[in-house]
Length: 114
Length: 114
Image (cartoon, rainbow over all chains, first blue to last red; front, side):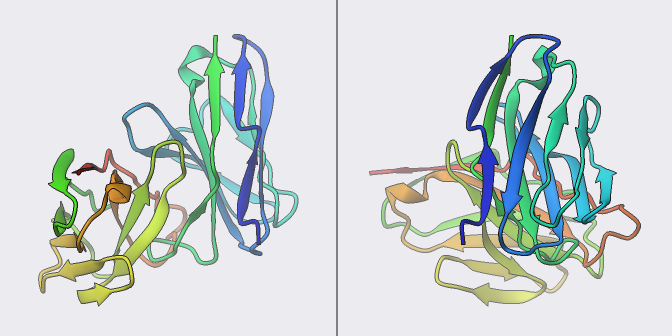
């Protein structure tokens, strides 16, 4: 199994541009998550999904959108990129829900908005 | 929602045992305690999880006292490769209508010296 894969690894955007961060998992997990991590800080949950067709906001959803058309894929869309969105983005998945689940993380996408 | 408090940083030397304590005074009856490890430029990785008493796996041990208001991650005989950030999370078994937000605080930055 490849686990959780993310593309691209790095990206530089100009202010106002848009892009989609891709996330795919091959573990047949129902639960998927998007986090952002600013330098020296912990991870903050942006959006999560409990299954295909179902998504919900996390702690910091403003400026982002997600969709979940299949179990495997959970893309994160940035519209009108802003410098405040410069961060490292991690996608994760888990088999079960809640605080007793084990989350599997992807390698991350490092995004810079100039 | 239980909040956690960990030391910001710790230093150790190769071959020593390292104990990182996490305080979670408001832990609820159904909450589990989970620890993750994060190396630079990588996503977090699950280390260990427990509910009460002691849990041990091939990587670490987790000690949880009877009142469950704190927990201690124990890393035996650390090596340079254990230099990482360690996160303590507390959460229950379900989303409860979307109320569970996985919270990765700033974690504990462990530096192992030769």
